[in-house]
Image 1 (tube, rainbow, N blue to C red):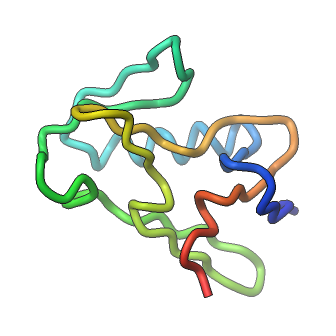
Image 2: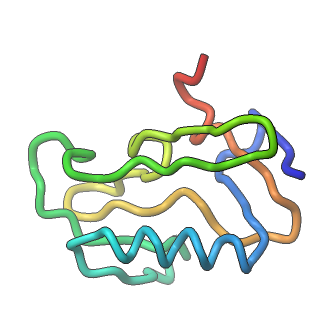
Image 3: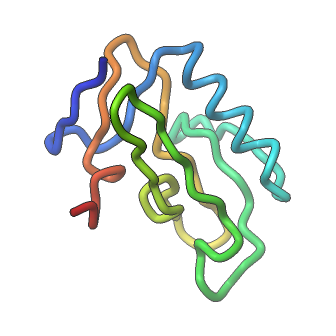
Length: 105
């Protein structure tokens, strides 16, 4: 189960699920990944100076009765120029935060 909480910014997943998501994201990225200590996010160096989300994949979360497709703008956050970070982290309680919920009708 997972909580959908518009008052929580990030999405938190159980460590084993987060590791699977982070590894799958890493497998499709053509960017160097790193974990800056300031933010603690899984981040990548951006090389695209136009649309910051161009070339990034969507993620689909599969639930028992539905699939939830998240576009790159609901998965990554830009930090200045040249760095974008995954808005999904590991946590004890699974929560879909408000970044993942943006523009979802």
